[in-house]
Amino acid sequence: MDKRFLNILVIIVLSLATLLWSFSIFHADFSFVVVVWVVLSRIFASFLIFQDYSLSWSKATQKTYLIKVSVNFVAFLIYMPYFYGDISLAFFLSELFLYIFAINSLMYGYYYYINRTQVTKTKSIIIYGAGQAGTKLQQEYQNSQYKIKYFIDDDTNLQKRSIDGIKIISLDRFQKNSITEKYDLLVIAMPSVDRKIVNSIFDKLQEYFVDIKILPTLSDILQDKNFSKQLKKISVLDLLARHPQDLDQKTIAKFIREKIVLITGAGGSIGSELCRLSVLYNVKQLIMLDNSEYNLYQINEELKSKKTIPVMQSVANFADLEVTFIKYKPDIIIHAAAYKHVPMVEANMSEALFNNIIGTKNCIDLAIKYNSQKFILISTDKAVRPTNVMGASKRICEIYAQNVSSHDTEIIAVRFGNVLGSSGSVIPKFQQQIKNGLNLTVTHKDITRYFMLIKEACELVLQSASIGRGGEIFILDMGQPIKIADLAAKMINLSKRDDIKIKYTGLRAGEKLHEELLLDKNDIKTKYSSITVAKSTKYNINKLNQQIRYLMQTEEKLKQIKNIVPEFHHLPNN
Figure 1 (cartoon, rainbow, N blue to C red):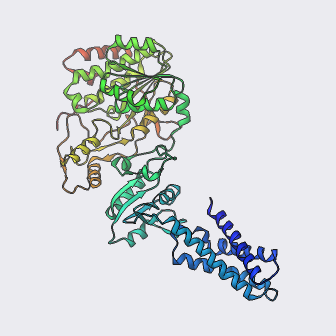
Figure 2: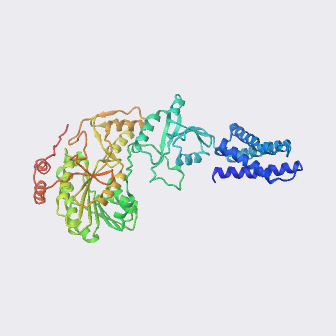
């Protein structure tokens, strides 16, 4: 129930009770005018002068009692002159003291009832964010071991106010008040906040807290479940996460709903998230194709949907793949299958080139042959001016996708950087090293990479596909690149392991200091700021097919890659 309405109700009921009692004691005739004047004066003093309706009865203090007394004395000064000389002063004074006694008895009775089984407060907590999420958390923590000391909020309109007696203060004031104090827990209660703000809060406040927790994003939070039970320890993913502001879920849903979708590499980090989103957006049928039994089993067990069909198959096997196309006739193909780990691809060049290039070619050719509506190639920032075989193989796939005679099939590619937490990426590696108490290995002090959350990247892939008309290479906005050394330092801070250091090991074969997302700065804008289109590359498709065949046969693979991708500059071990 709203506190304002409840406050009015209490004033009316208690005033009526104390006035009726006073009329009876003083043997005076009941006066409706007196009742109305007294009630309205108390409501006026309560709402417009003191705003005491915001006080929490469950946390009543001496200050709360004094405010209630003040409110009613001010109300007394409002209504008393109106009746002076008509009704005795003793009548109003006795009713006033009776009312003050009644309201405070009711307040303290509620206080002791609520707190009769309260847990002893042994830990201190600060909530960052005094909005709806912060207020809900405060209510949930009332009967817990945590004592909320302050709310912190950046909104100057909220600062100097309070919630149930708990002050809302600025970050600067908190830092001034807490020079020597250490608190048990900081909760960041801002589900839609940008990562830059989370980073800033973490950097400025980590020294004051034993532990820091954060609420999930708005899309992940469960509204019908206690927020306090959904809190998670702040992780490097929270500090790096980017949430695109122009994500158009209605367009994505319209694009994929009731379609037969084939996803290759369905058990991988990107593929499995695309499978989850496809089910979420209500596909007609989802064909999950992967050559890894374990990965395919994992995603199939997770989804357990009547719409999903697991197919254990390699994209490099044209004959088997064609059977799948004939059987299921997919409307949309999302090609996420690839060997992507740079050092592994360098060490297994022939197999990687065959899987990445021939696998992509097989999928595109079959999509065209069986009249699929759309084909989406998952590409990488490593395809831009490639310095390693993995990036070069993806660039060849992009060129093929742009120049093949596609008939009625719309073929696009989507290029983006590293996704946070994917298998084989730097974050799981650092987590394992920290777990084992090892120094974090970084190849170079200045090396940088682009990062994006897996879910956001996959949603933008689908959004790109929805606006693609064929022949485009879409580029996702990855924000600013992040220094891997800074990432390592942040993870060490999060782990609170002072014994772990950063060890520089030297660049690996094919590894760039800085990745790029564009080949040409004259990129084309789309209606979404998170998505741009790279300049197209014209290439004779017959010549490309001959070059690919020769690449698969020749021993001089690096030389042949250079013939296809002139900007390829292979970097050996550094």
